[in-house]
Image (cartoon, rainbow, N blue to C red; front, side, top):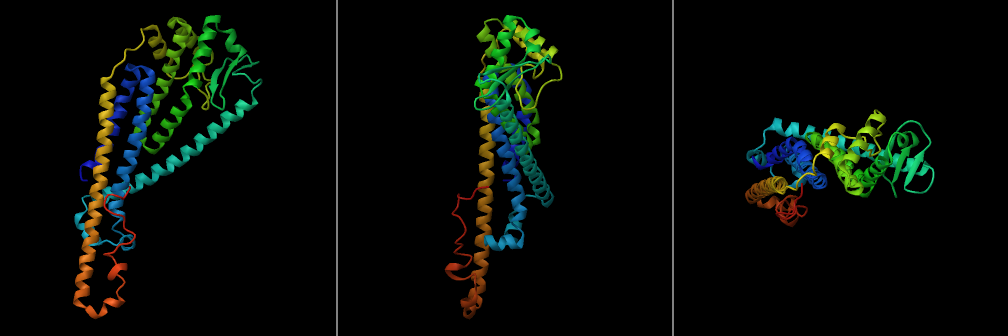
Length: 341
């Protein structure tokens, strides 16, 4: 446990550092899936490692030890975690859980706001055209989602560029990109090290929609022009509840569209998968070590209690720790390997 419990932290930092490269070098669709999977696994590893580090100190609280029926002194003698590390881990875990709760509430508010906006839009078709001179274009997730474009935006684009713009927004809805956004926002709230992953993920979603639009239109240059003109026309008009063709780092998106499509690469995905496997294996090993440590502490308590009972055999009937209902029986203690952290 001394080493394995810290490996998820190292894996998270490594993936966070590599996320921008993944976003720019891999095809956007597999890059988005890889970043979402990495965020979920590393966020779980982060929380699990913090919980294990915190529990080594929490388990030594006399009241907790009494409920768990293990020896505090035996647990303290085997504990490989410094008290300061355990205390900091407890504080960080509490802050991260609160941050996750706040982010979940905000994300739920965003989803409800998007659905209300969908319900208020005119017409019942996928496309809603606003009679507004302010140039805006975005996709609102919902059941079903809607594409919103203002007349001001349509007047600034040619026919081919309008087609490219609409194809981009349809790609956002078809790929359910708002789900990816929710995953990155929530995991970054739980694990602050994943914020670069969330930023890279949002860029990848725009690139994903760009590439699908280029396939639909059949001309990457037209899509690049549409993205550039739409971004210049609607600067500062993006919405937190919407996915827009003007999102992300537009110059980098335009350069990518003016270049050939990104080549498929399997090595980065395999390396990332290996890192995630190491994260899961190390966390499982740390949890197993913690489980064995508690088993040993419980056996120590049972042994000490048996010695006390042997020294005073006439008092064993009044001893709550003796017999089938005492610490050795441990009716509430799960079997080895069944504890989950």
